Length: 134
Image 1 (cartoon, rainbow, N blue to C red):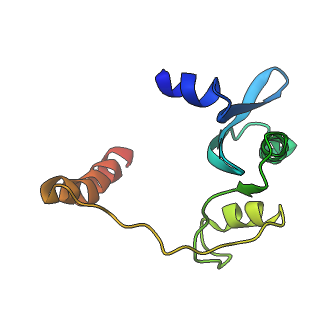
Image 2: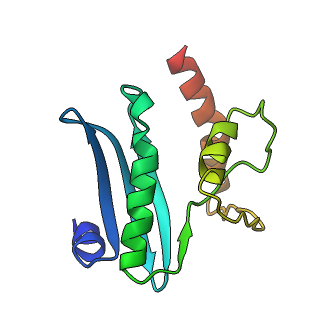
Image 3: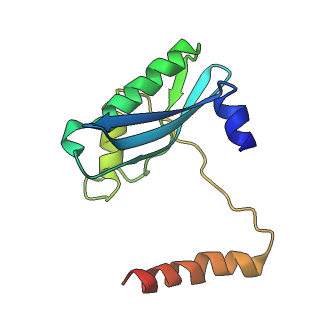
């Protein structure tokens, strides 16, 4: 609750919703710090995908960021594999459609505090999800 109070009510973050025929079909969260804005999280329904609510939300977030004085909008990551057969290629194509600049960073590193929990997280949890989804 304090995060909501500080981030959203403090003007550092904003929740965006796209409705179609009275039903929310897409949502996203953006954050600003200084002159930079980030697209943090988003979700959309498969229903009414043809009305392309995600494009509208992105443009609204960009517009909001500019109104806040931001000069940079970060869509965040895409897969480093830009082959069209990659399952994440659609995400790349969507973000590329806004004509932005792509920047490649060093990557993520894991800080391991407990080797047992780290092993469980990386080995046992994926196996659990695989077994429960079959």
